[in-house]
Length: 135
View 1: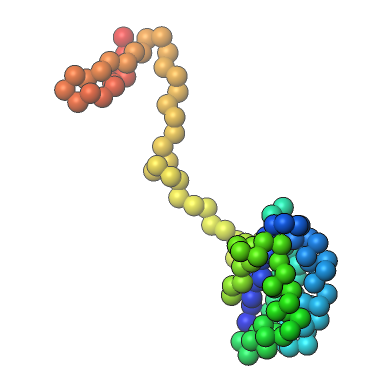
View 2: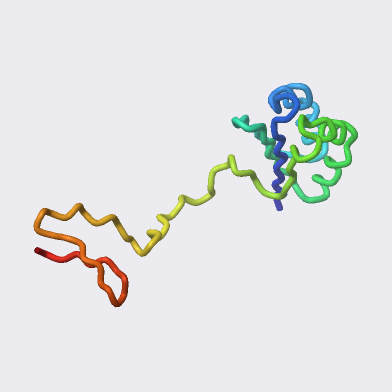
């Protein structure tokens, strides 16, 4: 069974693009060496995402403890909050199925058209609601 993982690196003291240029080839080489059969880089305005597809979880674990991988992950541009690693493909990947239309928020409510001159608003004293009445 395929085991999909994503590594997201955010811009920090320097660009995540520079980090990808410095460590990208070694990361992909280590991934292939440890059982990845597919990978894809995504460059985004806030950083980069590496999506990896391994044969199984054991292959991912072997990749994760590789010294080149550890060195690359320890040198991300923002060492405090600039790295996310999670199972599945990241926000940059497309959906496997097309999106369905979402229900309308507010039960499909829409703005009322601007009333003609023969309409006017009156405040109901008991409920404090505005009523639209024909003149």
